[in-house]
Amino acid sequence: MKQIRMGIDIGGTYVKGVLIEADEITCRLKMETRDGREDWQRAIADMHRELTKKASGPVEAIGLSAPGIASADNRSIAYMPVRLQGLEGFNWSDYLAVEVHVLNDAHAALWAEARLGTGKGKSNLVMITLGTGVGGGLLLNGQLYQGFMQRAGHLGHISVDAASITPSITGITGSLEDAIGEAGLAARSLQRFTSTFDLVQAHRAGDSWATYLWLDSVRKLALAIASFCNAFSPDLVILAGGITKAGEDLLQPLATFLDLYEWRPGGRSTPVKLAEFQDYAGAIGAALYDGPVPQ
Image (tube, rainbow, N blue to C red):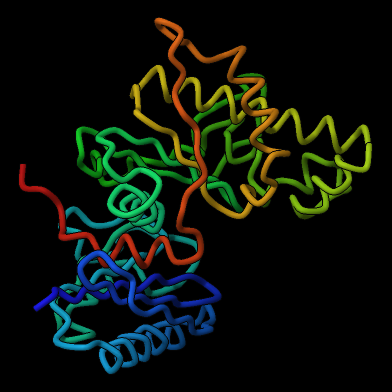
């Protein structure tokens, strides 16, 4: 019998779920939720119930993906101070009456790409998620690297502007998240733009201010990627998130800047590719995760 795995990804707007049998995604579901504690807990329970009904047999592994820092045993989210009140320390295994592994959502997205997506077959990966904020994950020697206090992979919170005095949510100034994340776009565009889509459209139309803002953001992303390559020497860098919908307007200038900044011993460059999974990456990665590797 094929092993059946369930993955659930929780966000402030939607809960998404998948069933995976023998590395094949057999079911995808999405349910709307809100930030209120009772509502998202109910949505998770509803998703678990609906996926269980749709499974062709007993579900043998369940994983949950959520924002925040996972606990050391990957049984709960240990730290998530702003959104989803009540998420911190919530015991999903007790709530659903089954064993549940819990992962940070960006870590789960990386694991999905490493197991079934763009990074399949690679041992060392850097993944950067570009959206409202900027996150990411690291695969080192074939293992998801969570690090001390499980906070590794906060790649949006490196500094790419030492002159900045604007702090990120972690306290670092001049962060990559502040440079390209959509949440900071209004401030850095002097209130001209609130969405990356509008910014890129204006850039395409020849708006000089939009072009400056966009290319400056992409240049700082290139600096970050080159720095990650120096630090971790990945086989591949994967880009995910809504900002990657800019397509060649992102990839072409990014390649140009990487030609300037990336160290390429022997003339070999590090490939940069888009993620295969987007909206359901967190749920897929959570389904495939079996818990931390014993040290």
